[in-house]
Length: 310
Ligand code: SF4
Ligand code: SF4
Image (cartoon, rainbow, N blue to C red; front, side):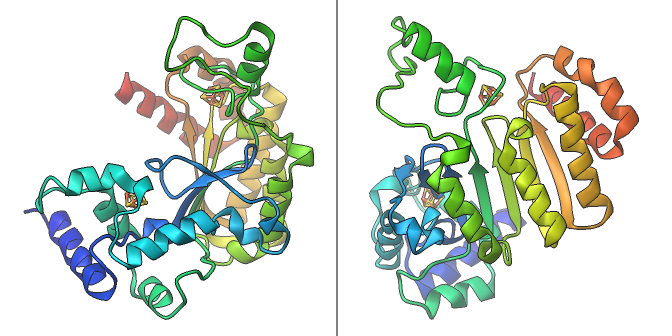
């Protein structure tokens, strides 16, 4: 057994002792939030569920601390296998030697302070997560084939104009069963900014995902908030296609550079959507390289990552 597996086993023993054999730290401290549709899940395995927009008026942390998630936490504390996490139970049900994402995520999130916080609070307390992945909107300048109208406005427009794909059973991309809010009039985005002063105190990692963050207003509002009220402990990650117009990328890189050079955030990593062509990078790389050292590194990383994956 490797050192990593030893460590995971030890942490599993601790959570078994203090809570139960189905406890997962990710249910408390890890979240993905899709503000354009008002949905959330603790990790990618449980299906996203709806956030109650009325609850946000008095409790903006319900973007993460939904009633649904709190009930799942309760089930975990009671040793039950909540329905949404079947992916992990399938692996664990194969035997004690199998390592599920529950073990891995709990291993990376565990510390004594978080353990005590859960132990000495009621099951339905509102948690400040340590990791958030947020999508501010579906505005995107691309329509990648594997994407979805929920995440890409261009894709959404295409389906609205021409209808869903009729030759495909599992990727028809129908759009009549959900609503996508505009960034400017979105009650979930409003709740996010109400929550930000509180959640940003202890948030360690924020990942902005798409749509395309470099063309969305909320990305620049975030930069402004961080300029005014720095978070030197915050790791900021951005999923971007890096294929926006040059002036948009300049605005983005200027914002990033300003935050980094003044140590207003800890670090920034930009992950380019890897299936895009090298041509996208080539169009802008020369200009960006001459303007922004941080983006040279970002592009270099993104290119290497893409090469690895191809
Ligand atoms: S138990 Fe598994 S599926 Fe559920 S939140 Fe944890 S890692 Fe995700
Ligand atoms: S760039 Fe990202 S958000 Fe836009 S269509 Fe492609 S995968 Fe979807």
